[in-house]
Length: 145
Image 1 (cartoon, helix red, strand yellow):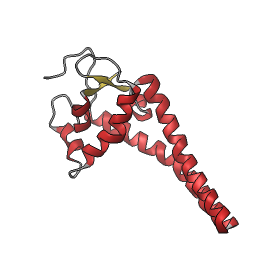
Image 2 (cartoon, helix red, strand yellow):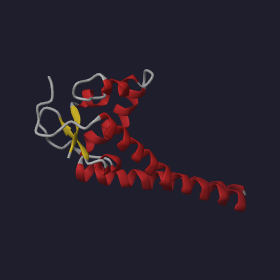
Image 3 (tube, rainbow, N blue to C red):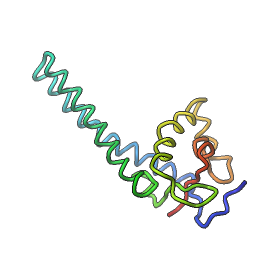
Image 4 (tube, one colour):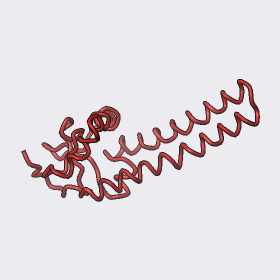
């Protein structure tokens, strides 16, 4: 069944750019935290330095997840998708995807799409609704907002 909702399907280019923005955001938040942790580990040394390294690295990851979570919860989108004026909706109803479904899509669905040489992501180039495998599994489409 082809998408017949009220939104325009997001282009492959926009989806790729939105994904790159999300990756860039992750790097901007987590890399400085990891560097700070590594510097503290070297300067302080011993077990305390290693502990601070772990705390800084985990803190960066938690900050990124918390930031993305607010986007999932409020807007049915990720930071990168929102910057590209996109969101995820249920294909059958055009309704925003729930936070739980967004998390399932991001955490489980992305891994499924990555399984066989990224074929689940490459699928977007041949699918008429520009759906990846994780979109198909959860019955979602990425649309222009």
